[in-house]
Amino acid sequence: MTAHGVAPPALARQLGTGEAVVIGLGSMIGAGVFAAFAPAAAAAGSALLIGLALAAGVAYCNAAASAQLAARYPTSGGTYVYGRERLGPWWGFTAGWGFVIGKTASCAAMALTFGAYALPGQPTAQRALGVLAVVALTAVNLRGITRTAGLARILVAGSLLALGVVVAVALTSRHADAANLTSNAVAIGPYGVLQSAGLLFFAFAGYARIATLGEEVRDPARTIPRAIPIALGITIAVYLLVGASALLVAGPVAIAGSPTPLATAVDAAGAAWAEPVVRAGAIVASLGSLLALIAGVGRTTLAMAREGDMPATLAAVDDRHSVPHHAELAIAAAVIVLVALTDLRGAIGFSSFGVLVYYAIANAAAFSQPGSERRWPRVLNVIGLVGCLVLVATLPVAAVSAGLIMFAVGLGARRISRRS
Image (cartoon, rainbow, N blue to C red; front, top):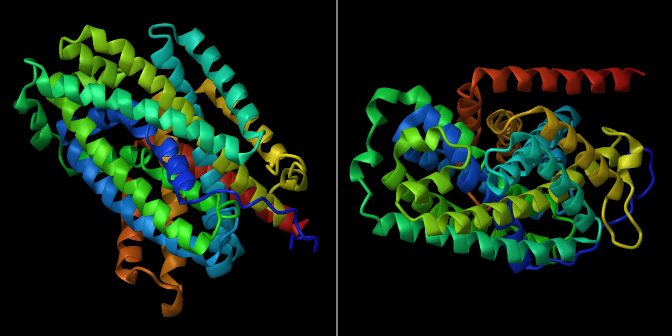
């Protein structure tokens, strides 16, 4: 029921485990491999590999919490719904607001990544191309979730092919230097490693797309707990292999200074022929991630609108294609503004802030579940909660400041709305 006592229009359950895994992979592969390594290298040098392992550990805890909660509450909205049900409306709103603002920034980051790889050295044209990508992929999403899953499958295959080229080139290059894997690792210190973990966490958050699609998967109690760990496990393996390969040939300084780190890596390996392949893979990966992100943010916005925490018009579901069309159009408009105004590194940091808060609440909600609903031990929820809060605190100051301001705006607006 909505806040007004009217049963909301339902979304159609059309996705199986394979489609759910592909949507999760499409959300993750692209964000981390092609964008987040650069700011992570700036924070931690080659110790970004340690940060990557820490981010993967926190992501696993969060994935376990999300899967357990999604099996109990198989509806759109993710932790917005879980927080409301387990902890109360204010916690649910905080999680939902964090997800919407964080993932809207993620959409902008993916659009900017697409532009950076497609048109190197042309910043104005990159932004314009990013805007066009947002418009085009929003149109795809508005045609229905099965079309989203089908396109995501194609995009993931292209991404993995390009990443395979990066790894092969790096491991066979005469320019590979094992010393690059340890340079700067000691001088950076624990703060830099933790900051790199927080930035790289941005790359792992795609499994949330599976949970936010809980109203559109068949047999969600079985499908979601299977799909989330599978997608995350594949992504962790890919990230570790590609990250180590890029550092091996290019080193942390070159990776940190490049807006297109994997293109820089194959160039450093002396394989100029591979650079167009990598750029094409980055384009495909960023488009796949953007496609799934728009779908996920739209569905959380739908859930919040159903409960009166967003304008009621955003709860509309298109009769023909069974998608939250008003919500997705609103998200697309916000993303276009961010693409025009922000830069890639700023978008990544701000996104990590919002999403880490979201998952902190997910872990708290999962901790409160009774034994009959548990699939994993409570200690994972504690580790996940503490890990999220630590990574939030070590993000760049600008990202933390902007995040705190946006949460203050959202919570303040909700209080005013409730009073009136």
